[in-house]
Image 1: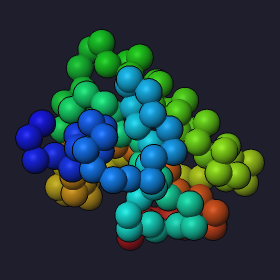
Image 2: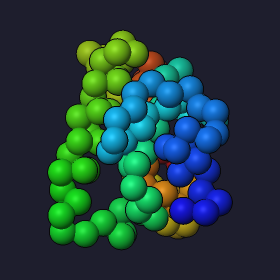
Image 3: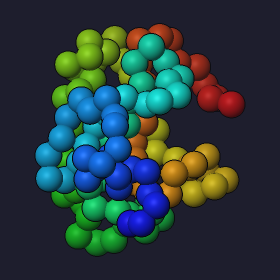
Length: 114
């Protein structure tokens, strides 16, 4: 999508600390980390948010979760635990309108998050 920063990263047009890439998702370091390890898993296909997923997207969403686990293991946060967040639209805290998962670890997470 035109003007979407995550689409630019997926297309390889914008710099990012890419941790994983395939034809369905890209994982990269968050530029404003909220934990010692904080990365995003972004769908390669532009989907504005979880509110716009449809029947047929189950495989893509499952793949994104598997990639989140794989990268968490590679970064050494799998065993002690991590938080996975999918913000949805403005009141849900979503700042970039492209479906993405935040994966955060390397410290004790608290609840509620704020």
